[in-house]
Length: 183
Image (cartoon, rainbow, N blue to C red; front, side, top):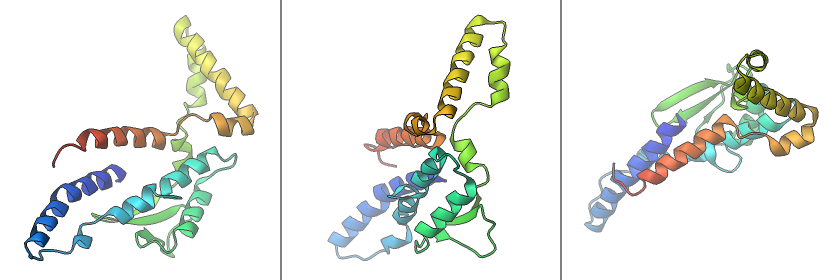
C-alpha cells in the first residue's frame, strides 16, 4: 500500500497539478485538489515519527513487540486525520484511510518479519551442509548473529537494515528514475 500511495502521489503531481495551474491561469476553476491529494497519508507513513520510523525503532529495541508498536503509533498519531483507531480493534490492529479507501492492519509479527533474520533451524541445517562453501558462509552468519545477541548495546548500533528500510530504498530508487517522466 505504501508503494501505491507513492505512485498515486506521482500521478497526482504529474496530471492534476499541471492541469490545475493551466486552468487557474485561464481563470477556470475545475476541481478541488484536496480530493486527490494523498500527501497526508505519506506523512503518516514516512514523516517524522511516522509509522515506518516507529516500526524500525521497535525492531531495534531489546524487547520490541507488535503491541507496543501499535500502542505508540496510536498515541503519537491519535489526532492524525488518516489514522483509524476503533474501539473494537485488537491490541495489534490499527487502520489507515488510504487514498483508495480504509484498510485495517493486523500488526501481528510486524516486528519479527521486519528484522530480516533467517530462521535459526535453517542456519543450523546449512551449517551441517557437506558443501564447504555453504557450510562456512552459514557458520560465519551464525557466529555474527550470536555475537549480536550477546550485546544488546552493540546490536542497536550494528543491526542489519530492516526489510522496510530496504524496501524504502528500492522504492526511492524507482521514484527517482520516474521523476523525469510523465505518467
